[in-house]
Image 1 (cartoon, rainbow, N blue to C red):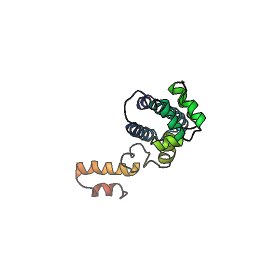
Image 2 (cartoon, rainbow, N blue to C red):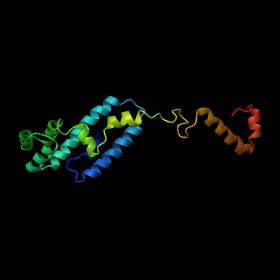
Image 3 (cartoon, rainbow, N blue to C red):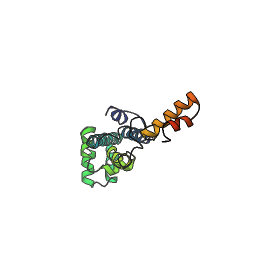
Image 4 (cartoon, rainbow, N blue to C red):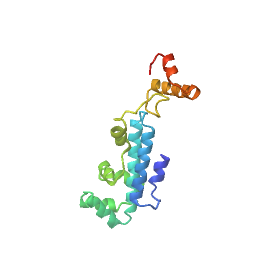
Length: 173
């Protein structure tokens, strides 16, 4: 959460495009790193919290009442409701919760912020890791293939000949 808190800081003077890019990189890297764990519930809660922070960032950027009104109307809100919310004196965090219905998950995804749980369920959980055996994971071989190749390498460096090794172990490769 601390890294997401840093990326979605309301006082950080970076462009929205850069913020989106950094957020996407972080989400992809974090989910890929922990892909073998079962973290569906954790990602759902973290997603909700991160979307609220993103809404707070945008609400702070729309500083003037006129800008807030115009943006709320563009999001499809009625005149009286947009005027009421634009003139609200509530803080950024509270308004981010109020904007949940109008500034929805779909709109945030369209802005370029990848949902952690969606990325986890579609891109990561559908793909099987190449090999989950302890020592074979790095080279995508089974443990038996790896052991035989290691033994062959050791034997060839000592004796320089594979034929004796193959005859000794019965020709099983």
